[in-house]
Amino acid sequence: MSQPDLSVTICGVRFANPTVLASGILGLSEDLLIRVGEAGAGAVVTKSCGLKPRAGYPNPVVADWGAGLINAVGLSNPGVDATIEELRVAKRVLKPKGIAVIASIFAESVWDFGTVAQKISAAEPDLIEVNISCPNVENEFGQFFCATPYVAAQVTRRVKQTTQIPIIVKLSPNEANIAEIAKAVVDAGADAVSAINTLGPGMVLDIESRAPVISNRVGGISGPAIHPIAVRCVNDIARVVKVPIIGIGGNATARDGIEMIIAGAHAVGIGSAIYTRGLSVFGEVTRGMQEYMRRHDFTRLDDFRGDLLATAPVIGIAPNRAPTLVNG
Ligand SMILES: Cc1cc2nc3c(=O)[nH]c(=O)nc-3n(C[C@H](O)[C@H](O)[C@H](O)COP(=O)(O)O)c2cc1C
Image (tube, rainbow, N blue to C red; front, side, top):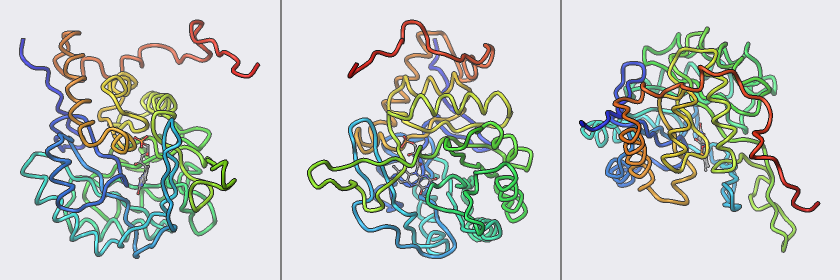
């Protein structure tokens, strides 16, 4: 039997396999990109860049608390003008290896989202990811950009007016109805969506100093602890929109990636797992997914993508997973 084909095409851009480096996890130095390429990622997303350089919060900004990470980096970035050059380097290194390059952007007003998108387009990234879900950035009215379908759609429309490059809008699990926001951004022109950004905010304390472990006190939660929430979000979104979905959140193993595809995702974003497993996680996830497909006689990801959509939404707790009281 021939090898299963794990390639995916998102908005006309081919990824050799469905694994994607999630935004913000690694810098854009040439060395790192070469290593990501050698490790086998199908695409990379840059750290989100904004209109102006931003210092971010003082260290410590990331901590491992056992079941995941907590972070409040504060969107430190050199600003869009400096990022254009970094992106060009990324493209030069990664394109010959067949790895797609996705530029992530954020802004502090609806208008600025368009300006950043327009500027970053000069570097010709394959796709632009629009980060409306950062837990640290509010709009001019003190509201998160992903908080209402109306504002999320406004950002999407503004970005679409300023660039010809297809856009992915990145959604948050922290709003009551992620599917409603997904539908609003797709109706406003989003070519794809990604979900999820970090969950929270959460707080992790150092019991010896009796202080929070990160400088901002609270931060977004990522890693294995949020994976079931991410799978549910992807499935909620896949039930209401037809555009491709990049499923992100706690993906660390082939099993996690397969769950995402079954839930309706086209690609599998990997972030925190790089801290715990290193860059080899990309190859491990891809090889494990390939082995699963061989075992099930699937030749393409489409053969099992969205299989869950055929079933009714499940509400409640499976009988064999009844919660047990820990301190009861
Ligand atoms: C240290 C750190 C920095 C991050 N920075 C960004 C960022 O700049 N832009 C963005 O859209 N998401 C950012 N994220 C969120 C990740 O891209 C991802 O959506 C989230 O961590 C969930 O995936 P994971 O559990 O695989 O890490 C960051 C996450 C971490 C842990």
